[in-house]
Length: 329
Image (tube, rainbow, N blue to C red; front, side, top):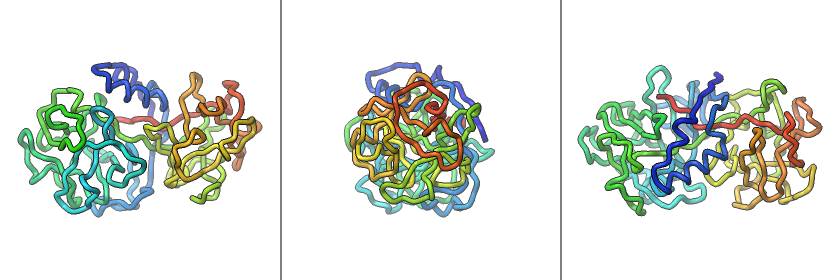
């Protein structure tokens, strides 16, 4: 499924300094009108029991951190997967499983599920009143576990008619999450992860960036291949730190190289400049450390064409359609 959305209106609103964090992240992934191919079959991580692993889902926000007020992450307290464990705000960590959320659409029903550690985001006791705490619980398909992510950044629970809320408008570590009347304040605005395919423009060949051979080994080559969005080695998650991740590893400039022709590969995420990518003005992905662009070698669109870095030319072989935030409400 190909979806074209214009999010320029929602991405331009500025209410408080913390919104600049969101806009900076959005700038890296191209938060204006973007075309994304996002029909995902199955999941890279094990789905909870309420979601069959072989279900084809029409849209998914993605897999990764969910950012809230103050740039803090939605966090399962203490990393416990026990039923009833509270959900809170905490400083974002590097790949912490208790901050790794999968946000799923619900097919024809706009309400989907949000889960981490194999459990679903759940309104405690199925409550509907202001101040009811939010926790994780075994997935059961109930209305307490249904969520709609809006274009305004709200995460809405239809059963209660209320929004996910950081208690008291606080951004302190340990701030518990609850449901509250929707008021569109900054403590009810959330930035979900973005996952999808990374493609060349349709006029070039619309091939996908692929971890060749599907290997998750350090040093596995990144190249072009026919798109098959059911393959996990073509699912890329845009992380707020500027990395692009697939198979649990980062898109990486080999050896931290700076020269034209340096190959691009998969490597264990390490926070280095070799793994940071920024959005360019013409659809490029720029590596700030080298000041060079992600480039399909020789401007080829053949399967197996290796990716490299090269001086930015704004050529078609340096233009990419990135995963972006796709609201389903």
